[in-house]
Amino acid sequence: MNLLDRHPHWERSGLKVVCEICGDLAIKPIDPMHAADGAQIHCRRCNAIRGTMADLRELAQHATGEFEF
Image (spheres, rainbow, N blue to C red):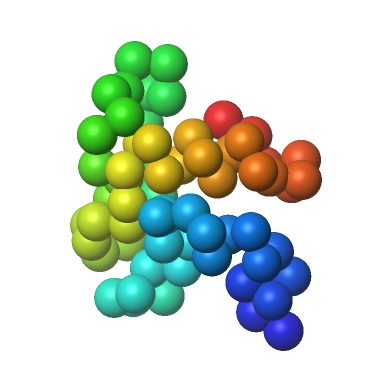
């Protein structure tokens, strides 16, 4: 079972939970309190763009408490 099977709401977000390039789950550290909605979220391993801060905020709103900002 992959993460999207366990968390189908993750598919609705524009944020790529798993990096399409390297398969990593980690993102580069960001300051969510000061980041604009259009700020890009990058993969920690390969620096690929994974989505935007707005995507991450939307994902957090629909989360089931398994992660937090």
